[in-house]
Amino acid sequence: MTTAVGKMTGALRERMPPLTAIPLPRAVDQRLLDKRWPVRELAAPPEGSGLKPVLGDAGAPLIGHSLDFMRFGVEYALRRYDDYGPVSWMGAFGKRIVTLSGPDATQIALVNKDKAFSQAGWEFFIEKFFHRGLMLLDFGEHHMHRRIMQQAFSRDRLNGYVDQMGPALRSGVAAWSGRQNPRLYWSLKQLTLDVATRVFMGMPGDGDSAEAARINRAFVNSVRAGTAIVRYPVPGGRWSAGLAGRRLLENYFAGNLPAKRAGGGDDLFAALCAASTEDGERFDDADVVNHMIFLMMAAHDTSTITSTAVAYYLAKHPEWQERARAESLALGDDIPDMAALEQLHTLDLVIKEALRLVAPVPTMARKTVRDTEVLGHFLPEGTLVGVSPTANHFLPEYWTDPHSFDPERFSAQRREDKSHRFAWMPFGGGAHKCIGLHFGTLEVKALLHEMLRAFRWTVPENYQVRWDYVSLPVPVDGLPVRLSPR
Image (tube, rainbow, N blue to C red):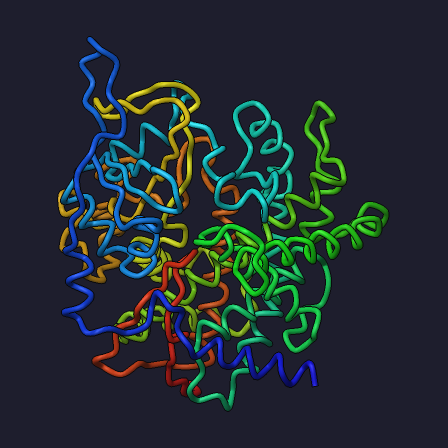
């Protein structure tokens, strides 16, 4: 009975959009976007400093602009940039949050030369759910943890992970045969979870098991809880579900840790248990559990979002799908190793363009640890800051026809991403640049390679995906496609 109810509620969840994504007439959406609120200063600059105040607005009473980005995503980010420029503040989640957009502003915060920006900005959103994950650590402690963790992402380790994920992806994609009209996001999400379970945990992935379903739900609940409006464990609420998800994940990883310490293995869990620097620094048990929860979430969710976006654009642009397929078929029937995947140059271009159009992590949180300035604007100590790649990826001064799908912009002849160091930043930047970016790219390439070998897929000509930005971007309708055996 429990399994039947769970499957039924899961099926409903896959088909029903969240409240922030319920379709409304365009005129209503336009009215919401066009709404203006009184402009105020965030804080008065110190007298004689020559700095300008950060301007912005509080938005609607109580909720501020919390729902605006969730509903409108890129459109809202660009409207805000047009209204206020690269540095502004807004009310959201009961806080005043400064938004830094555009390459110059984001570079200041992410390079962080003066160490004025702390990762403590994440604490407000996800500390309860991803406690002491690598992304939440600062300065010297972060550097030490990253040095240890880097041992788990060496080229030799990556080679091993690719060898492990290949068979899982091939069998997982093959299992889609007979499913002519899947909601592709959910199929990809289950497949990437199976891969993460195999590669990260060293355990066979089993998408139909009750345990796999519980783990998947726990990750989803933990991620979505960070943007809950009601930040209190009300039964049935997102915050409460996130806390329960965190407890489940802690118990799961802690229960498996002794065996990993004792037995070793080629998976990431074992690698973190064994990793040490040349100075002998190692992770204790709590570190390993915290990092595993964070890395599983980061790898699983971002790989799902990126592969979904790539698949969508390949469906909308069949000429690119055929071009990518030709390269995949040229590799032959063997499951590709890392060197073979690196030959798939068309997929490289398409993945980079998909990451530009749909950044998997649309906002990066920071907090000022002392008074500072960005582009001549005064930010007082303790300011919550959102660093957004969203606007950077669409500014016409850096990108040709930025709203169009054009993978050739990343070709050696054009390299529009080199127009500014932070024009293209789907993996962040500075000391906290994503440690798993190479792993994630290889996984997405391997997954799309198997899809291209097995199927052709299409969407109706007039179909346009709509992304839900409640936490990380997810297609509202799950991305229904038509799959045809190749």
